[in-house]
Image (cartoon, rainbow, N blue to C red; front, side):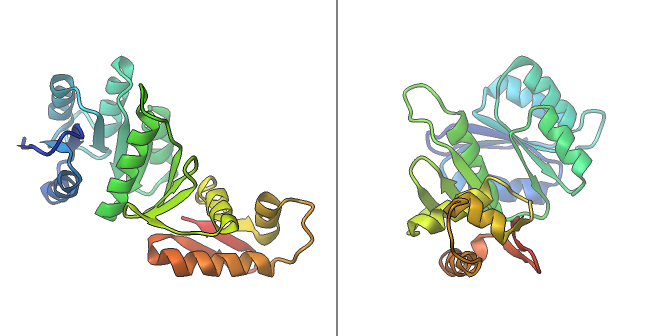
Length: 230
């Protein structure tokens, strides 16, 4: 188990048996100012969580031994409200549903972008932080953070200026990740059902989002229908 001191953003426990992945996550989190504790098994990870009282845990689903990441998540959730992000090499719906049902706040499928993982960590912590801090609702799509309260879109932490309808379209898509949405659904949801334009308006705004956000935004065309985010 390795520990590295960062600034004062708090501790994150990373439970991952692949040292290459664990070290990569460690590196990117430390760059952002977090203190990171690594563990290679579920048992070691659970002990580190109990000892360190971290702000968050990142758990690999497929840990070796009798205690995998799902079991660690279940035990953590039984005793505390610690935010949890799951890592999984398996893209199966069952794994994702099980992780969320056991209390995980989000999941990332391997291979993943370290920058996207850091963005998701920040978004989860923003949602979970209370006290005197202003609560914000931040949606994550690829490397893009969609801050609903601030009405900001950020790529790797840098604000990208969007027109009002561009932001509304991005928010509508980000609130429905993985869903194929028709142009008419997007028109109704963003412009309103009483709007009398045609669906080329959606295409024009999608082009602007792609131009401004680039490959940071996983916005896919569903041919003959519309678009899907993620």
